[in-house]
Image (cartoon, rainbow, N blue to C red; front, side, top):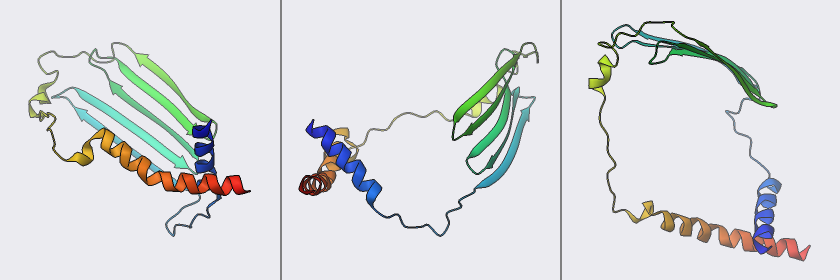
Length: 147
């Protein structure tokens, strides 16, 4: 129960604070972009079109999968959520096994590198976050109990 009250007080305190207006804030953002990638050598075919008008985003992207099927996704997102329609056109392209993945030799192999920096210790990060929030939570709860 105490945790719930702390979280409730924390969320209420962040809502109650006046927000500064950002000079670069656009109340009605708009954009439109598209791109296309086509490589016969690697048999990579991708395209995307997307546009935004305020809180509404619509778009479409398509790609050829490793089996030669054309996958097309038409999507829209807005205040009511996200929806998409996906279609698959099988046999769109005949994949040549000799060329499939021809560009993969240029891919850089990566591997994790261990670090000795204690700030990357998950437990240490959590302790720092909780330690930093504790005074704010205690102050907010105390103010809430006074009222």
